[in-house]
Image 1 (spheres, one colour):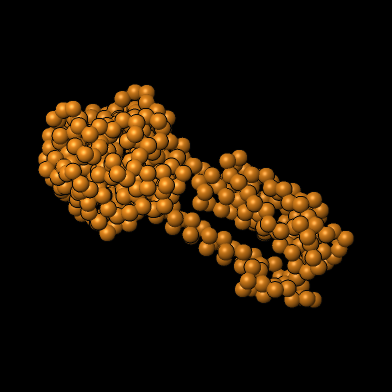
Image 2 (image 1 turned 90 degrees about the vertical axis):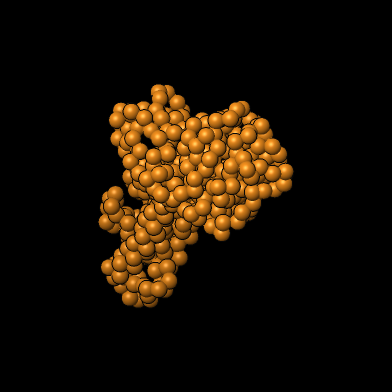
Length: 378
């Protein structure tokens, strides 16, 4: 096998192949040092073979050839690169003993389908972590289709686990490869991922390979030419960003103004005899979740009950604030600064002040959520 290290996007685009139905439109490098990317040819000496394609390594791509097979823990390179937000978000609960990804090589492949089809992705995943470090340093390969949330990850082993040293290798590895650095003492795994049927039009897949829990002992993935077929697994589900409420009921008093989907600030007037309030949100999207804070005890003065709605994507949050002052016709005014500030006794509540402060908090949350979503796409 011959490896040509390269970050030339045209060379990588051509190496990802395609067919009459699938056309590669572009490739983007998202993370990693220049030496971690390359193309390969001639991975054809049995028993392990794969068509020409692209190699991604958490070490140096050129050190993935058979010339670097060893009886010790090499190749072994620290590339000094971090992980990606999506890798670190996916790891807990999916990768054994995960606490951090390092030296992650990440590329996104954009492609177009002329007709609805499934996409077939052949790949080999090899690692020097095997056989000595198969539990605490579980280097992994991930592939995210049309998004980088956990539900978009589509690369799994035969047991349905994320592809990783340890559980994946235990099921189907071979040490007999003569083409790469991952034969002899070390191991390599041959798998194929096939998506569910995707709609005609534009799509993208982000491929990532990384060191887990350390920067050393190299692993690599060899990705063959992408092609199309029929059938396959289930396509990932796009998680909803709907953080709206469809309704809001309270045990005492009346909402002012009346509930609306776009409303976020309400005032409630209750008699001084009312000492607690129960707020019951109705979600617009049943996959979202909510949390109600406050209301178990209403004290004299300003009381704020906050309903926080978290969308299915786990990022988008909506805030809905209810202001109570038992025994008074309106809420007291507030000093801006803390969570609605301190009550100023005897001063009537000026609703615009509270509204602007609440809106500022929501704007900051919206900016943070947008930034996180953008970061996950990088």
